[in-house]
View: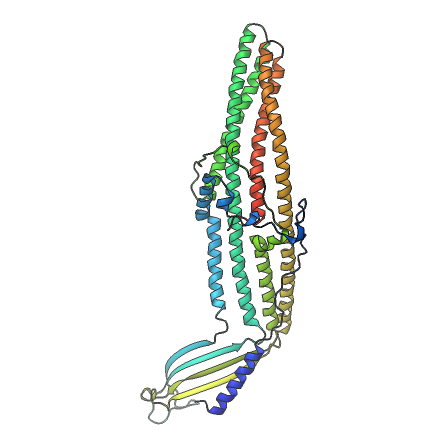
Length: 474
């Protein structure tokens, strides 16, 4: 067993190694300066640093979306969507790796029990004693090995694994946010197709009425056959549009069903596009809030933190490693003496310093590569931040201009719808020809369809603004 002098020396060595373990070959991580502006393009900078709180990116989707049917659809998608389920499994995997990394500072401990029998030649190097047929040996030992984390290799390993775990969490949030936006925009597209189908069918009825009237006038000699044929062509074109819109409805329902993790089927709708309320104003906050709320930005920073930690690991491998190993147990050449204490007890303590020599070129290259990866991840982080600010600025501009377009198209649609009624009266009175009637009807149909499209785009734009602000995962 160890005497007091050996124990004292070992204690001093351990204390010395623990002191050195506070050293690190790389500095602590610090967030790069992103040089963000005080406000988005086209938005006035808040006075005296006052931030619009809470901004829209922090609103839960159940509050942001007012249509209960849409909220229920999003709930189903979050529960069943396969992409989101894969993201959850990635978190579980990273969590297990994190638990494993937390054990890095604990010593390795092995228990070994062995027994052996050996028979040698009488003329060999180690002949048996006279009368012996074989030799036996029985050993039970407990061995311990511990590496002092002098250069921060184990600590940086923990930091890297933690960063990867956090990155997987943020990646799941990003999938969550994208899923919420995709379901909402698909639902709005379905409402638009419903509106366009209703408009087109109404215009098909109007075209049927106009065609019947023209046939009567043709029989009376008031219009030519060309007029009847032109109106028939218009009617067939509208019928074709009905079939195309119905196809679009089926495809969109199938897409929404898959997003919700269900077999393609019908999607319930309880409101019309024109009756769906639209939030008049959304608070965009300031660009700096994206760093803490947008999952993709946070995930990019976690990737940078992981690369920074791996640079520390690669650097630590260039320096000597300090290892202490110890073994103690019982050993005997006879089974009857195996538990004869203390005579069968043994112990062994060893300290070792391992310095790579011929691998230095390889290890130094690996360190340089790790630095390149870290620099690359920093560039990607900065790029992600800039893209986030751009996306918010684009969404703000889109919302603003679509509001203007909707008002103008609403005026245009009202004028053209009145023109259809006027053209119909004039045609019946013989004061307008069939070309004027067909043209006015076509223009009115286009305006109504465009209005439905713009209303959907306006809802989409607000949903997109909500997404790019980082909303939807709360």
